[in-house]
Image (tube, rainbow, N blue to C red; front, top):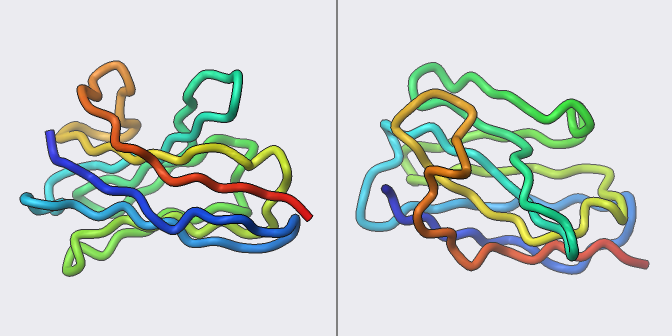
Length: 123
């Protein structure tokens, strides 16, 4: 499994935007589908978006369509999650994970979750 490091989370006001990054180290991301997940306090980790390795196809959880955009830059070995019009309920620790298979990335197959990146939405 490829090792990924998340970054970009911070405190943002409601309605604001953030771009999260998921960068691979020691391996190329070219052949991996990459999924973004999040876990809010007291809740289970949920998959929210995924981008394929082959054609860059994307999927999103229905509730986030139109606000979140996943993209990848294989030259930079990085997958991004652009988050717009952030709401209080978007506050969570965000994680990414890669998989050789298609989207979505199955969370039960992730052996080592990274530390994630904290997104706080508050005025």
